[in-house]
Length: 231
Image 1 (spheres, rainbow, N blue to C red):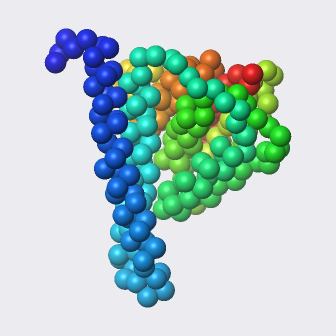
Image 2 (image 1 turned 120 degrees about the vertical axis):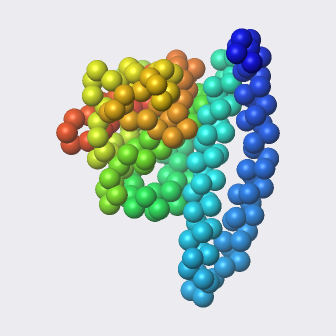
């Protein structure tokens, strides 16, 4: 396995991602079914909390599986479509409601014009922004607020995530977005490792769309941006 052909390795990773989806979907469906059957007013609180924990864990596993699929792709073939930006952001906030509640975080979304849209691959675009959001949720202090925004940036579109967690120092930003920087041997304290290779996968998604990830911030917090062509 040491000298495995990269193309074959990619196919194997894609197969893993594909095979993970079905059992994960079954777990999600059954957890949600069980949650609907319970009356929060009378149900055992430990049971309710256990099911909520399962739902949050499933959300993490879903993103990790999607990231595995993204990294396994040898082709940059995309399926562009016209996308309402507000819908992408709303779906992201809605899907992470339980995660944010468990982390004790608030979410603030800057107003997004209903007419703001972009032509892009919806799956890759949404996953790239989601990874930045997930990184912020992981590192933001409990009781703080993660702030989301989407706006036109020249000829492109800029999705921003701000949090009150530690900003990545300028000298570690390139490392934080690299494959080497995501390994236990390569990363350094301060580079904000994200579960599921969040920053690496956000950067890979942006690259596939012809865009980039920007890292900024200071002592007041961190700012991450997913910038893509608007077309």
